[in-house]
Image: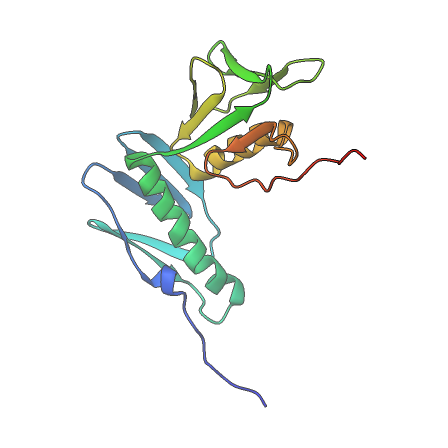
Length: 189
């Protein structure tokens, strides 16, 4: 039996994005530029959706509702533009925690993060443009912040990938609040 539900539009894509008074958005075809108190963010989107600004409201609409790719991009583009607005107003940040004897992080210059994670060498990580990294005095708490949600998440994932938390002693790099299932070690006879 075949059911024809018709062409569904994205519920997320249909809802408009409210633009705060201190944010300036410019749309040039598929390029969207958002500027606010914390900085500037710019992205180029697929041409399968139409983006329009009317006063303090930004709307995203499907150019061709019969095309499945256009329908998929409808809600995606709206969510990304909303995240851009939130990023330039409030910003995004994630905190990391480093556990282990001798494990720590320090900054070398403005954009190099030096990680001592128990290897025979220190790991030097170059911080991308637009990302700020703050480290506490002990070197075990790292805070990553910026205006782009994707870049902040990618930097945190890159740092975490150098030494993921192992389940026996809990050593490694983890996101604050992340649950790590602990395992019991081998028992001696």
